[in-house]
Length: 309
Image (cartoon, rainbow, N blue to C red; front, top):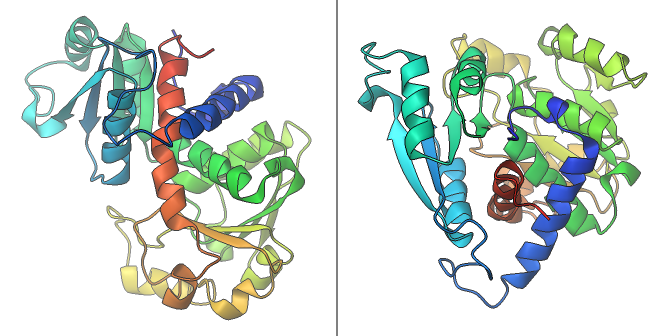
């Protein structure tokens, strides 16, 4: 049984295998409608149970379509609708019920510990749809998008991140080790990435370039990533945080410091951290990026269900 919780825990070989499968599957769907099933119905009869503790649009839609196109079905739960959410049932008992009814479990949670506890008690694969420290499905899909557009391995590119240090960046840092690409980060000093993940990078004798200057971070970049500075559940002084990031906004002027064919990616939803002129420019590939979630998550499901060939 294979879980998909953190990119750090999955081999480079398996991650590359997932991307290769996604590329083939996307190509084969050119002549199919949205709900038509992939040839062979590889997950026919399988049920993916999804539970959302945090708001979701793209993760909810993409996993729904992913399992449907593979011939399976999905059931979406809300934590506050379960006995677990009201304190009437233990997580262990809930996990046993989920294992009895479902074939896989996707959790979008506000607690990393909850993912680990479910992994401990479930008898079915666990997929991390987002947690405070990691967003692996998003970042693996982003790598797929980058290579699709640039038509070369990401290992041959300079990748830049401008913005807050969050779960998406943590997964991007992990990906930089797994896929061996150059990563530069631009953010204010007090928002630098957690030391534990930087120490993990050092254990591979690798280096992440971190700058408190956005222009230095994007210099000669092939791709610029960003994310919303104020997350949905951020318990911070929002006005102060936005002011701290005032010099880290993705503007047309900033993008000129990157390569002329640089592309811009954003996992959405967006805020004031990106100029509309950039967001709706030809360099922005956010809609292609969002749609690719479906294709990559199909291959992640096949990996977890032991059906990836």
